[in-house]
Image (cartoon, rainbow, N blue to C red; front, side, top):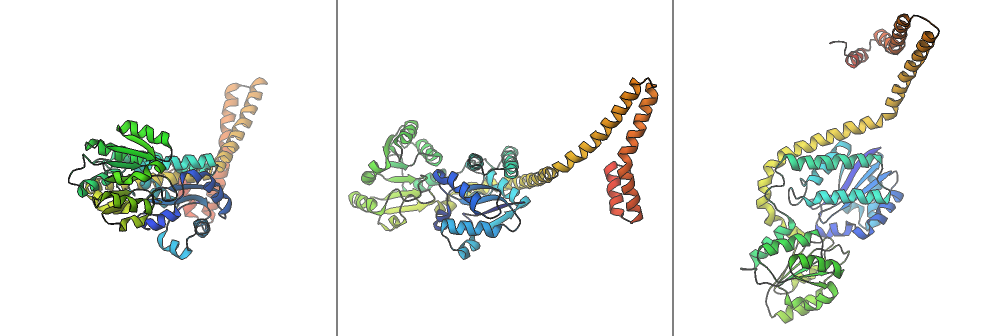
Length: 418
């Protein structure tokens, strides 16, 4: 069996494709079960789905890419020709190296961002709960996470903090000459929106409302930000009050539609509205961008904003990539060792059996009154002969067959040149 990492990300696919492929957190357990049951030849499966990427990590035979593609096309209704042009596939050691880079932030839109490691951990844990994480991907998860931590602890890849949340706030400062007195609506209550709110507070913004599908979650975040809380349904009729709207929920469809913003725009009387939709799938109807004085940006529009601090991290990325490559090599070594565990057990058991047989003979001889020193000498002689019998036969056969490769291997194995 082989390990395959198959997927699309922000580099290979635009947002309108990524949102069609994305998996929601609410349905991921079920999706994993269906994937394992439906993809031909798959033994284990993990799904990583964030705003910037969707990847299937599977244990499957070496011809398994087609099976994964076929399932994803049918499950997400995308033409195979389209998916083939956008998707990438990494196998075995390359898959391990890719996942270490992803987990450490080396493959993120914001180079070195730390949140992805938590998302990867969660993806593995959900697969564990779904029963689709077996021994092969469990080993991969351990290597991935441990070496990603090593990357972050031994390099400065995480210095000069940048994030999508930070980029959204920087963009807001470019739209407005001053943001301190602006009314802000935060849609969602997850980590991304929480970080946006913290950045806004640092800028001195005090007028914030957190709207979420679950009021309790909105209230918890609003309390941290000294803001107000609302449900999305309740706030949708008051959009005209807000100068800035930043959205990031886990919804599979738009949570704020075109008509609400058309009504809000009329009430605002040409006052501009700055909106950033950080969600994939998108929370806000893209048609909103065509309304006069509404400036709608998506996560793909933030690349230029974050580039400056990314440049400061690129020097550190050289060392980080070297660590990721070392981690991938370590994964392959451990994987190969585990593949031959049964052989190792058989080898050890066969020699243990010989030792016990000779030990029993020796003890019986001593119990019968034979000279212990003589018994021990015979034990050493017999044990040596039995243990070197097979290697001796192998050396003779290799010599007779001119198998110098085997002879060199035996020299290395027994360190006979030292």
